[in-house]
Length: 235
Image (tube, rainbow, N blue to C red):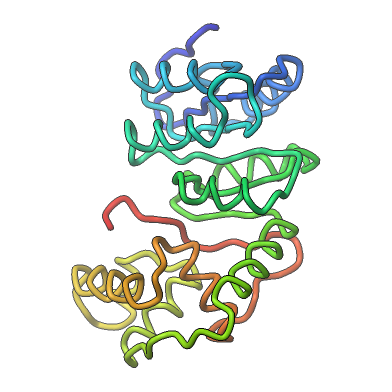
């Protein structure tokens, strides 16, 4: 394992996968991007956590199934160490349980391993910008599971302002952009978001977006990728 030098303004990426040939290919794809640099290639979750105790990657491209510490546990530990880092899970399977475990652990997005190099690079840029990205098949499964989990339970009513905020969240607006759009303070936006999460028994923007799509508050994204604003650095 070899660490990269200072990355300057480039997106610093840590690649984590137990298949060394696949990892090397990912590293070459990322290294070829003019705005990215590979911090290191590692092959298990424990090694990824160790790197994150010593270095500060911007994005961690994380496999799920690895011997020893798997990618979900590594994601949770890395998010504890580096709350501002974005974990992007790259997996071969859109498995419901693993998806939800990853989201709960703090992953910013899921991309399937059969995606193109351009899609990998785009996903890295997306999560680095603070947004959430999911492969369409994973987004469909999450929406279905979200619907099933809520069943016929009636959600508590949201106020007019809370509805405006959740619509803006679902359209990918940042807290600052929502504040300007609605003519309110950024702190007030955060308070409304916290109230929304509490009322709907959800935990982050990804789930808020899924709720907004399910309830028809916003249109579902296009067929290529479902994209939504991810958890901001300040709750």
